Amino acid sequence: MKIGELAARTGVTTRLIRYYEQQDLLEADRAPNGYRTYTETHVDRVSRVAGLVQAGIPTRLVKVLLDAEDAADRHDPTCPREIAEQLATELVGVQARIDCLTRSRDAIRGFLTATRHEVLLREDQEPATAV
Image (tube, helix red, strand yellow):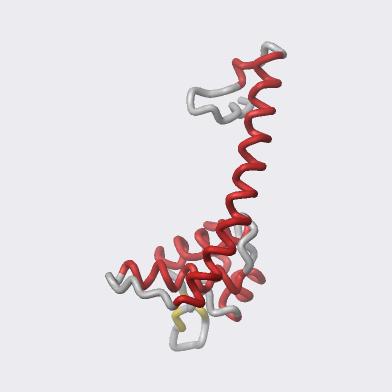
């Protein structure tokens, strides 16, 4: 697939996909004519990168995390001390964001229940979408 289709499938702009490539977070295949080409693996990778960035992880640490995941997939879970320290530091911030989001989710859920709008909550506790 071409970059436009990858963008459409992932909800990430073509400009941002190119930025991910510049940051070595993504490597496109190249067709004989020089055009970038992508596969389903790229869809997963872009979605993962975008999710990490949206969660507040800086791209320099996204690269470290993805490299560590790739190593684990190869059954080569090596991680230098310096990288482990960076990840551990980032984990503190990630947990703080999760805690904040959890409090917000619980407050919204409590408000909907208190105002007798709990019918808008689905079984999995996600807000129902309007039909």
